[in-house]
Image (cartoon, rainbow, N blue to C red; front, side, top):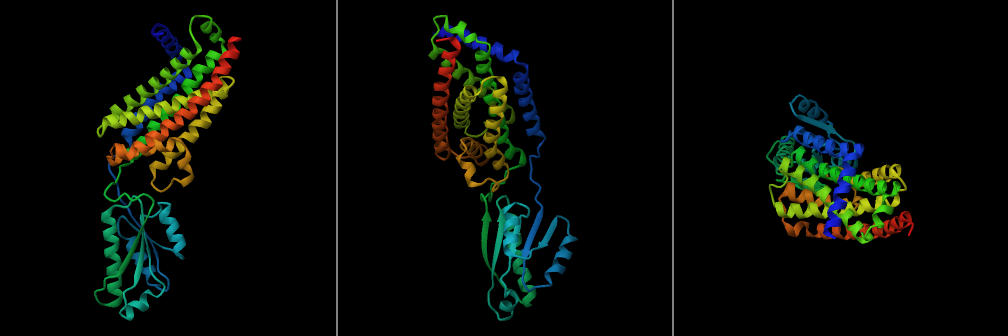
Amino acid sequence: MNRHLGTLLKKDLVLFTRDRFYFLITVLGIVMYIIMYFVMPSTLEETLKLGIYAPGIPEVESIDAALALEEGVDLKVFNSIEELWEAVNKNQYSAGIALPDNFMGMLAQGETPKVTLFFAAATPEELKIAVTTMVNEMASMAANQEIVVEMQTEVLGRDMMGNQVPWRNRLLPALIIFILGTEIMSLASLIATELEQKTIRALLATPLKLNQLLSEKALLGISMAFLQVLLFSLIVGALAHQALITILVLIAGCIMVTGLGFLVAAMSRDLMGVTAWGMVAMIIFVIPAIGGIIPGLLADWAKVIPSYHLTEAIIQLMNYKAGFSTVSGNILIMLGWSLVFGIIGVITLRRRYLWASGN
């Protein structure tokens, strides 16, 4: 069996290199993703963009104009607290200040008003302190005496306090997902070529068993995907923390995309079908990775996409220095999805192989 396995692997690797389209997008893709990673900024540029809801305080317009003259400060007055919340939730503003309706009256009566502060998930702790101080100073100036306002803080999305992530590191999980997504189509293309050219008949005419052929395809898919993401991770330094656990997560992801590659190949009648179904699978596969770039952007429904757990595990390991206990659940779920994809794909492929071989 080892001799047969080696021969099959060599044959498929030759076929892969002869397929100019998928070979080129694989090689050029990795090069492009590496370049993209290094050209992204490695540091953060914080801009103070504030929104404020201040009913009954016309003076806030003059504050807006004054702050507009300050470099790096952008203050916008909102007409409703709902609009302010939505703007901060969409990361259009780093922070929002919502004053109560009777803010000035409470100050005049010596009461302590309750101010609600909205912060985007990526807002640094220093900015939160600065906004809190600014609100207290505004209240003290309005009341002509020192006042400490009661604050209610709400962080919209993932709270990244003390864990600010540069843009290149936010992009890192998405680049790995893109590499694995390309491998879905590459593996499916190899299988479809074998079926379309009917070389399966010659293969099964030998002592080779169908189970051995399917095992070789699985090994090939996992190996090719893993070597690509491992090379990329080594070059960009993604294995600097918890290297063994990160490799385990990548292997689980490679197994998952291999199962998905089987499924795409089983659903495709020819190479055009592989491209069509492969693009659909890749677009869906990438959605959670795009959401990981901007915290709070991803909707809850996207968590049902299998690649969400791969994205989440990569983010936790590479950006937040998490341990095995944090990502173990994601690994188990990925392996579960791999089993589902693999079983459905293998069952369907067995039938297509047998039909193509005339058995």
